[in-house]
Image (cartoon, rainbow, N blue to C red; front, side, top):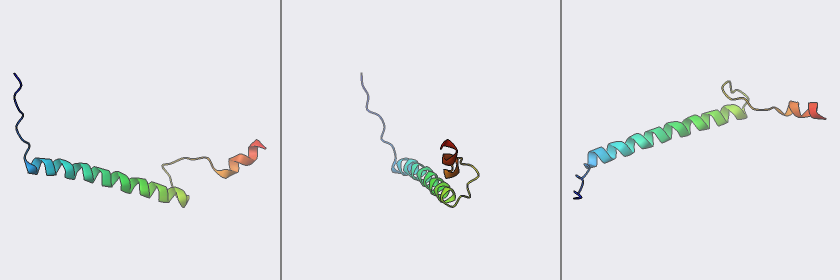
Length: 58
């Protein structure tokens, strides 16, 4: 027979949401930092084709 589950406390719920929000904020900060470094050509951890490679195809 089905038995109802116990209610999760507000502190547990808030703690889980805070953890989720913290992880999302860290990832957003890393993505923004990577985007800025790519735009300023200072990225060491991200490789992308440069425009100079297009001249070789012609």
